[in-house]
Length: 355
Length: 78
Image 1 (cartoon, one colour):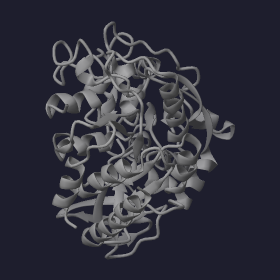
Image 2 (cartoon, helix red, strand yellow):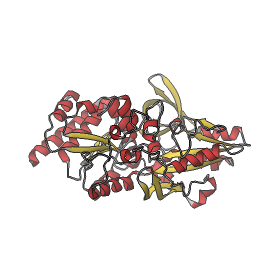
Image 3 (spheres, chains in turn red, cyan):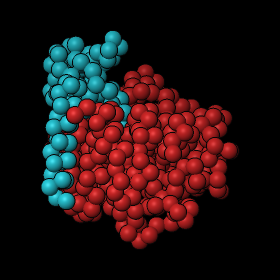
Image 4 (cartoon, chains in turn cyan, orange):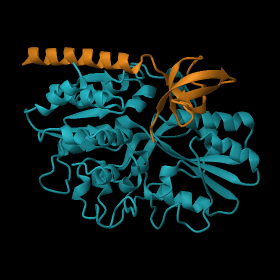
């Protein structure tokens, strides 16, 4: 068997129409970059899910970051992809007077804080299970080094509860943007790097619960194509496959999970377009609350008029069905978060003409 | 944001690994995975999150072997 055989087997699929969701934003990017949508037959529809952390972050969180970045002697430290996401009235990048440092790793914030003790640095701690261990280590280092001018503003998310929510909404019929949009999800391409940390066992329990198959995939074309092909063979059954075996084990990275559990606890989290979902996020435990920069109650979710990001994130609307898509909302001048992020569904539908 | 890149460990000192990504050298923390020189690892935002247990070629073989089984099982279930 070769990759070409996978392509041929998928192209030959002529069963009932299937909608498969890639939950992870990095998968959204890899699927587009590999040209996979153009290889699919009409009966297989791939939709993007709520796995891009930037896309699912609500406006209240961005507003709080802007408030902090414009406060005296305060600097926000962030990964680059959050800087152009709009809050209720602007973004970090274009707010006059906002002090922001872009970094590639959270650990850079330790050096920043130690080199400038008169400034309070706030790390914009967004992400999923993959990134949570970095923030746990960051907290550990803040404490170990006795750093008093570095805090976290958290909007950490976890996968299981939001997937359950999508499946429940699915069963209830959903609210598609267009009448012909198929919103039933027949299977999930499970996030590879989340599974690297959590282990594939997480998805075994979830598959049994929601009665749908999950295929953990890596980020190469063969791995993603294998996941799609396996899902076409198992629709309606609670199967779990692992097509990223070099990185994903059943139990995951136990040390990473233990470190996250030491510093964080589950909490209700606010998701753009999906509302608040119990047990779908992580917050600092009470013993470390002094390191929090005001993350509680950031639930307001202002979405610009006409923007369909909320429905896109829930897989209920294709990006091209949003009336703003490609007209007033483009990567050069994004309105919605899904067009800002390089892992966003709208961004990839736009730059790769994904249909 | 969940991007992670595979690289090879060149050296480890005081919990910091020097990792080679096809000629690009970076430093990554090795707090959560025991690694040694020569290991292939997955690095996410400056942290090694897993040691890779197989080469890309071995992974392809494993994927195709699993698929053959799935396809066979599926045919039997029809």
